[in-house]
Each structure stands twice: as C-alpha cells, then as structure tokens.
Image (cartoon, rainbow, N blue to C red):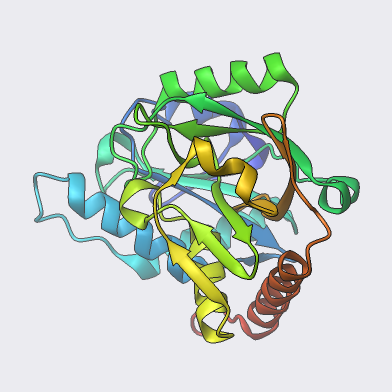
Length: 278
C-alpha cells in the first residue's frame, strides 16, 4: 500500500487526486526513487537530489536511449507543492518500472525529530544487515521491514547496519558520523548510500578546515568515540545519546558547531532559492 498524504499526486503530465494513487504507483523492489524535504514551500537541495536520482537511474537502465528532462521534473515538483499547498513535508518521486516515461511524485507521511530529541539525543542499536547495492537509492522491502521491526522491538530511533565483518555502514534511513577528540569520522562513500545531508556535512567540514576521516569503523571501536550523530533528509543532524550500551556526549562542542554550520547552510539555501523562470 502506497503511503501518501495531501490531496493530489503527480504523474508524468497530470495532477490526480490521491484516492487513485494505487492505480498509478508501483512500489516494487529495485525501484529508483528519491525523497526530498520541503521547507517553507521550497524543495531543500533540489539540484543534489535530482543529480543522485538521475545518476542512479542511469546506472541501472539497460536502455540508455531514454532522455530525462530535468526541467520537466522540476516543474512537476513545483506543481505538486503548489496544488497541495503544503509548506513543510517530504516528497517521494520515482520512475515506475525505472521507466523515464512514468514519473510519479507525491507527499509522504513524515514525523520529524522533536526539539527534545535534538536536545537530548536519540538511542540507536546495531543490526546485522547490508544493502545489495548501497550506493544506489532503490526500494528494498525486506530490509525496510526488518529494520522497522527491529526499531519497534527495541524502542529506538534508528537501526545502524553492520556488515558480516563487523563494520558499521549506515543507518537504515540515515548516515552516521562519529567524533573522536577533534576528528569527525564516517564510513567511506563506497560502502553507503551517499546521502545529500552527508554530502553537505562533509563539504562543511572541509570548507571550515575541521579534521575529517572517511574510513571503515568497526564495532570494537565504539567505546573510543566521544560523540555520534546521524544525518538525513528528515533527521538533518540528530545527536545520538546511546549506540547499543555505549553512551555518547550530546553536548560536544564540535557536534554543536557542525549543527550550527548546517543550519546556516540550509537557511542560506532557502533564502536564495528561486524556481526556474522566476
């Protein structure tokens, strides 16, 4: 069943009432899709989401002849936001059957972290699981269901995936960072879905000359880190208070600094964004 909110969804060329969405949207494994956040009627980091979407699409399509019109998709997303009159929320968009002629987009239900969760941090636990191809954002129903069940069973915010060798990779719907002394650490891009928020954080770390490492992180290292946070479209930068039984510092100066830098970046983007032809 398609999870949807709002009054209308978008097909390739139309806006249609959501009561008909089951007739138009495929929710199959391996479907290439994206989820972007709308803030004050503005699609946050739209260009980056489109770039990842098209990169994933190109990598899985055997028929490379289909042209993808980015401006058309941008206009469809703008129409969706305006028709539903939803200022803040998340939009999912995809090509049905990975076919560029079957574009679909709709608002999905979302629960953003509370102010208390940002202040106090959230609990996470590790889950032995891996993605088939972590670098491409595709639907994986089995992994999603396993992670959802695990999160509910343990009453935690997120499940952190661990590969068979005992290395942490990413959250089930987020990326993960650690702080050791003055150094930020995260798993190499080749082993994770390169999240848009993750990309922005790494850019901020480099631009502000903060120490940063991309390297494999083993379960046995958890006790050596002072702080931890997850990142994502909905989470933004969310402090972690415990990972398994290991307690993390949610008041770390370096953690608070990167949160401030990221919030400034998003505010600047929202203030400068213009739709094409505006």
